[in-house]
Image (cartoon, rainbow, N blue to C red):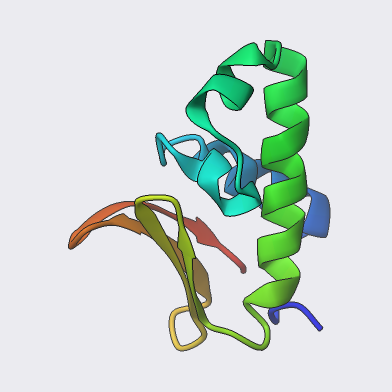
Length: 97
C-alpha cells in the first residue's frame, strides 16, 4: 500500500535510508545482532538500510508507527512526512511532498 506522497519515490527512499542511519541499532528490525551487523561491509550495510527503508515505506501505509531498534518511525499524514524519533527526541524527518 505505502504512504501517500507527491515527491519522487526514489528520492524519498534515498532520504529515508539516510534518516534510518541515525538510528544506531536499526539492524534490530531484521533481528540481527550487533556482531552480524558489524560483520557486514559498508555496501552490505547500505543494502540492508535500503531494504529497511522500502519495507517501512509500505508498512507505514497500514501501521503509522513502527519501532525500529531504539527509534520510532512515524507516518504523519497531516504534515506529509515521516518522522524519525529516538525516545522523545525528533532526530529528523523525510518530506513526502
